[in-house]
Image 1 (tube, rainbow, N blue to C red):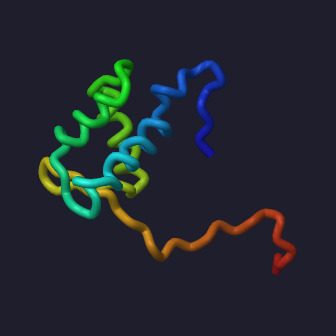
Image 2 (cartoon, rainbow, N blue to C red; image 1 turned 60 degrees about the horizontal axis):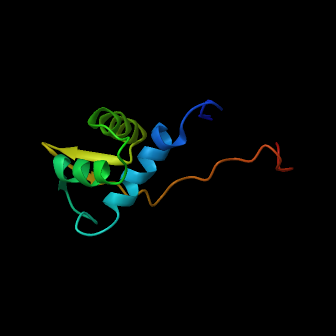
Length: 96
């Protein structure tokens, strides 16, 4: 599990920024289509004055590593995962 440092600023936390990019990409005009990276970055930067292009690229790399973003040239698209296996609980009694 990825845990943020207790002293870190959550406004610039990689997971929070990644969630914000997913939020941007799941709304019009980017929903279900490839969008130019600069257009998404401009919306991302306009949401908070503390955000930088570097933070955007780090968060985008994080999402691409997780498989949440698909790229095609200079465009990106949000990937929908439909058939995911559920995580096995450590507390299930069905241990063989």
